[in-house]
Image 1 (cartoon, helix red, strand yellow):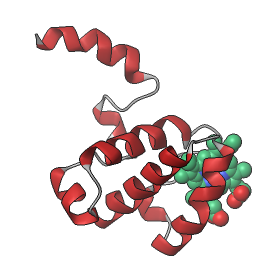
Image 2 (cartoon, rainbow, N blue to C red; image 1 turned 90 degrees about the vertical axis):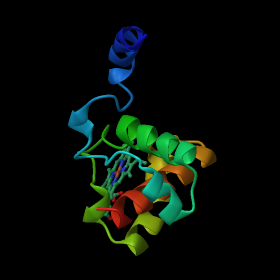
Image 3 (cartoon, rainbow, N blue to C red; image 1 turned 120 degrees about the vertical axis):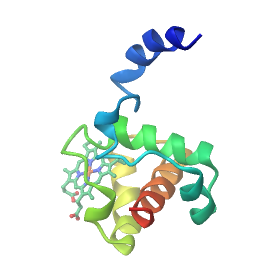
Image 4 (cartoon, rainbow, N blue to C red; image 1 turned 60 degrees about the vertical axis):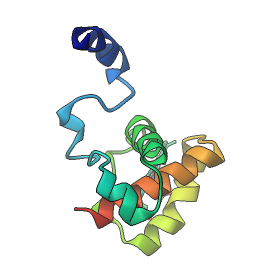
Length: 104
Ligand code: HEC
């Protein structure tokens, strides 16, 4: 069963977090992260995939820890507009970034 996942993973690799190489840039979502942030793991996963797929298109990924919480609140709406994200994706990215920070 597991081997069937591998081709799927490869297909998704370009856009979505599948490999460990992303773990440094975008810490994987954990149950603890979800509990601490009060945001569901599902939403945080959407935020992480969106962040990986869109937030490194114009510049290097800006690591969650490289920007203060206050500044993330200011930066994300503008960057979400840059990346043409939906409101839902924008919210998920912000939740994910803030949750990822707290848990490093
Ligand atoms: C269409 C191109 C584009 C996309 C997509 C994009 N950015 Fe940016 N980003 C920029 C540019 C240009 C700057 C520098 C000028 C500025 O601050 O607006 C920047 C700057 C930043 C900064 C530094 C801001 C500061 O004031 O120091 C952060 C943090 C950032 N982006 C995060 C993100 C995140 C998170 C995403 C994904 C939601 C994202 N970016 C997607 C173009 C983009």
